[in-house]
Image (cartoon, rainbow, N blue to C red; front, side, top):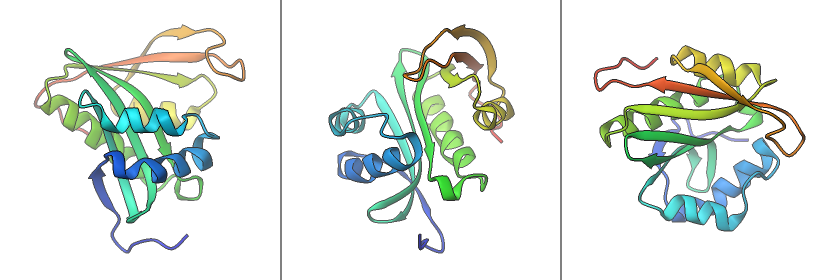
Length: 157
């Protein structure tokens, strides 16, 4: 994949639905449908951050719902061949900053019990495991529930 020499971190909207769907297919085996992506990108209570390699190609995306003072992180995906290069950290950091600026004081997410890379990323931001969901994923794997108490002056990695 050819990369823009300086990929841009952007706030995603409806016009990015196809690029999100393509990244989802490559990184998450098609977790969300096209309709789901359109809803996610159009709802003002949902935040979606991406790293764009070009006008129609995303390298990473992070999404979450704002519910009162809580950010419910619903998805984080990175182009498989671009993993371990800080892209996940970049979109997660921007998502947390945007949520904090919108009034969020807590963040919560689910992560596969066997996804040690994602757990390490979330741990670097201070997320703590607070519970588990048995057989949560389609393949029967368990999810860990992780939470973060955010502060307006918090220093994000």
